[in-house]
Image 1 (cartoon, helix red, strand yellow):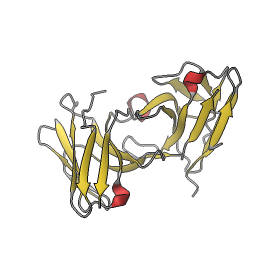
Image 2 (cartoon, rainbow over the protein chains, first blue to last red):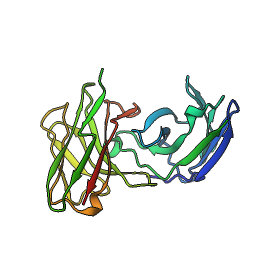
Image 3 (cartoon, helix red, strand yellow):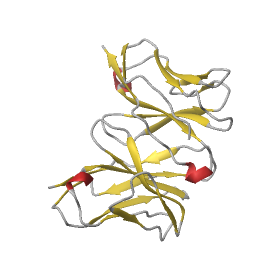
Amino acid sequence: DAKTTQPPSMDCAEGRAANLPCNHSTISGNEYVYWYRQIHSQGPQYIIHGLKNNETNEMASLIITEDRKSSTLILPHATLRDTAVYYCILLLGETSGSRLTFGEGTQLTVNP
Amino acid sequence: NAGVTQTPKFRILKIGQSMTLQCTQDMNHNYMYWYRQDPGMGLKLIYYSVGAGITDKGEVPNGYNVSRSTTEDFPLRLELAAPSQTSVYFCASKGQGAYTEAFFGQGTRLTVV
């Protein structure tokens, strides 16, 4: 599976947008970009995923560049409860059991 | 729905003891996974299963065993516990279809002394 690179930490002011980058320059054509987060050692929680087009749901937006070599997760109005480790993961579908391979993620701290 | 349920939540083992971490899901998911997470690190895959009767190794399988006799249950067995197995263990399940989301349990915190 292709690898992802994320900054180890980021800060964001409460109420502002949090933009979390992810580099995946070796992504293959049929790998999806997934985002999960982990709040204070709880089990990871799914946020959003996409292939080529930008995606939005009630939690976040996902912007994928046209060449698919990088993406950005956007939390439009960050709250203190969004403080968590955010993982950007590439998934190759049914191959090898649709396994998720976690990197180190980005520790997002939302400040009052 | 309860989702993915792990038991116990906490456990202290002595070196050389054995135990089974239980995981059950009520979503009729085919795919199930066991991960471990050491402090400050990302999750590492121990074993996974794509259906009842089928299991396969992940990145860090040594010292562990699994079985999948039913769709609902995916227990993780530790034989001869070692201090290196001190970690938080997460079970997850995922439905059929390549691009569904995975659901995680709340974890089992294991300490081997």
